[in-house]
Length: 329
Image (cartoon, rainbow, N blue to C red; front, side):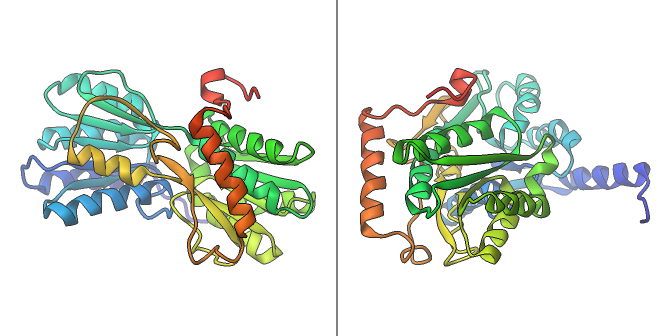
């Protein structure tokens, strides 16, 4: 294997960031996509759809940058601010510390972040109740299972992904108290978001233990999980974007997280402060379309919708891992 020198790697990063210098000075908004790229078919891509919707409706342009290295975040956000972009939207919790640092230096610039709370007067933070949507797909998974055993494959092992896992487990256990849930995380670094091979291996291991439905909350890694499910004749559940079309016929549903709506709303009218979007606000849900219609019976949909109504009405409380520091239910 031919190794690339560190000086070359740093040069590539510098060249990528220097691209900002050729951009015209503008008051356009900016979006900074995180690791995995804007076409990850998941979290980043949902954000991309939101900003593209805004562009098509308004006819205005926006600046963008895709983070490919953990060290790029501060400089990328700063360069956008220096170019006069506003608001600047950071996609993903991993940009929180970088955003806070830059926001302090540009108090008149509007910033926003998806999936994290940054406490600054010029920052709008948008959070989601992922545990509520995950509860629904957990219930759907176990009600569709022939073995009573279902699986979960997470991306990077962080509290946010544990929040998905906890909600999923609750939904499965409420729908079937005897259900067994197998859970694995892909890794502990940002590379865990883009490792389809490892995702497939984890899914296969869960299938070997009897699981016949697996939920992936792992960014680009999920594609490996979905392929493994198709190859094994099992069912998979997508995340963030509606991923039912990726492996039609074996995708039971997707836990949709409306990052696109969050980004679109920020661009339509920055407000600052913190917004939290759950089932009630339409921020999370499960996806139904032509690709999974034959997999979800009317009776199954009725049961899941009943859980949804009970959560919205407050009759069912879904434990929040990030609030409790553990999966307490």
